[in-house]
Length: 105
Image (cartoon, helix red, strand yellow):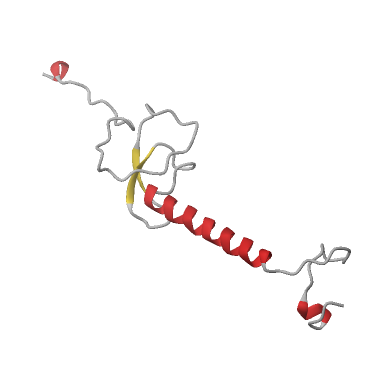
């Protein structure tokens, strides 16, 4: 009877159900690589992954982390845009009001 049983195919990225929680895809890993379950390092939810070292965060957390990084960069650019620049000073042209006593010179 054992010789008539079909061998189960390993799950791959293409054969996973659409609703299955997946990891954020890393480049360089083929789609036909076998997948297995692990927990996301951010939210600890169970997800399907192909490589535990390069794909350790779920798609939802990947989106939120990237959005958080983008917002921090925008805030940093806004802070730097509001700074007064005076050419010829030693600090790259930026005036530090605490260092100079609040004045320009």
